[in-house]
Amino acid sequence: MRDLTPAPGSLRFRMHEIIFEAETPAGKAFDVTMLVAIILSVIAVSLESVADIREQHGTMLRLIEWIITIAFTIEYVLRLACVGRPLRYARSFFGIVDLLAIVPTYLSVFFVGSQSLAVIRAIRLLRIARVFKLVRFIGEAEQLERAMRTSLRKITVFLGAVLTLVVILGAAMYLIEGEESGFTSIPQSVYWAIVTMTTVGYGDIAPQTVGGKFLASIAMIIGYGIIAVPTGIMTVELGKARKVTADAQLTRACPGCGAARHDPDAKHCKFCGTSLGP
Image (cartoon, rainbow, N blue to C red):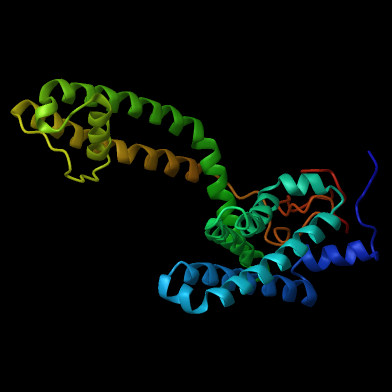
């Protein structure tokens, strides 16, 4: 495969340093400018949802949103242009977020109101940790991500058991209470079981008979135990998670794919194999 990594000293290499790195003054200024633009955009979209403000300043807010969207579009194109493997970056987490940050405004031309989805660009504020060298927070995020990934299967199996249980409780409550008490169908009763077991308790449906109240009491007690199980699973996995990246390496971005999570002694990117340089 042809090596498309930007050569040191080239225009693409300098663009990569400015856009992806936060070590140089130009790179930090670029990222801070983008962060300010993100905040302004989210504020503009939020204010536009207020009827009184929209009537008085709607045109100005839309203009601000379009200017920022065009700026983000140019930034996204430049990010793809200055990495050696643009498709890999486009499929990465931040690559997808960068794309989703600009799509809603363009969709608003065809679907009125879809610009409100532009608030998703607030996710890009996660880069603030890299810009301001909050690398310890990045390390904590790494541990949390690892714990969530390793506990996913356990939690999935647990949720399957919970789903089975709420269906059984819902069906039982439907048989005990019936339509007279508001349990008009099994789906409606399952809804009640979910609301009860999660301790939300809307109160829109409530058992009236002794048997129904007894079953509801059992569901409430089970609910407290159910809430504790996922928390316990996550706690155990967090205890097992270990930090595998060094603070000095967390902010280095691969010139090939843009990834920034590498081992302390890494010479090549673990995601695409590109040399990380000296």
